Length: 114
Length: 113
Image 1 (tube, rainbow over the protein chains, first blue to last red):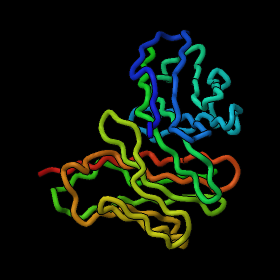
Image 2 (image 1 turned 30 degrees about the horizontal axis):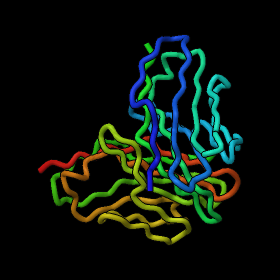
Image 3 (image 1 turned 180 degrees about the vertical axis):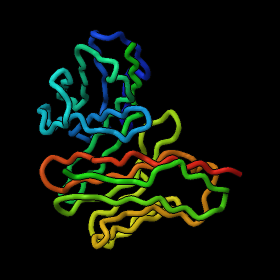
């Protein structure tokens, strides 16, 4: 069974550019969530995709957008990059159950905005 | 809104010492509670979980009990090892609607030989 994978591992961009991060969910999982983890902080929820539709969003501006594909892999797109977007971006997959939500995380993509 | 508060770190211990990392939460309902661990340069790994009041989650010698009366989920281990050095995150997830994780700010644990 393959776990959650993310690409690329590291990325350096300049302010104003656009970036796309990719995530492959764990086998059998149809839900993908994205989190932003700034240095020294806990992860903050960006949004969640379920069966190719966004079904929940955190307090992030519209320049953060995403996609989920029929194979349940996902992309996170960030437009007009700002210095504060520098962070570790984590993807997590899950299969919603009736009792709790156990999410499995990938290793993350570290984005540096100069 | 829902939130998680963790004790600030770093927590510095000698090998074989007893560990407690405090975690309290605020939620409008009855969440599931989690402890995640993050080793240097890696993503998050689920350490343990509890889905209802009085449940005890345990894994790899770590334990935490879901206390509804004190809204707490403190992490404990009887004897830490150097390999336990990492950042520990307490988190909650509501069991209705779309299910997102709300994390605390993390507590860094440093264990010396």
